[in-house]
Length: 174
Image (cartoon, rainbow, N blue to C red):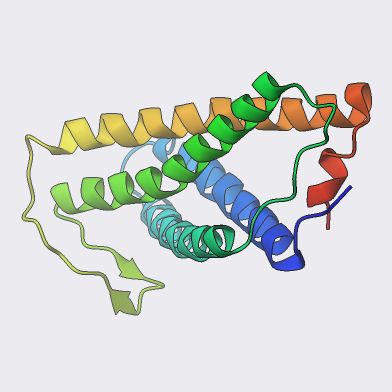
């Protein structure tokens, strides 16, 4: 079975770790009552992770567009191939949509994003109290959708490893 390239494997696992960290930090920070220094610090870190996810997603997409994925096993049903292709497409869309929605949400709240506390990102919209709840809603539900799709992705990988034993899972292991 043909494996993914080393850069593809590195980008896959790097973005997985970054997304898990951003998601976990996001859940943690919103459950801290009030406006504390710790909560503000976590918000900054969450934003920095989001910007990093977006940057790594750009690199990952460029790599993927210039390097074909290994072919699926011949015995894998066509419907499963199409489902996997569709799921991967949705995951890519969410890797971009979630950080962008968070960035827009932050701007609509009047809070600029300063990456790593050093590099201010462009502020191209004024605070917008009407748009803020819509962007918050979108950011939350895009994240919940990503959570569901990542669970499906992991379950499918485990199915291929333990039930089908077709080598699909091993193609992406470091």
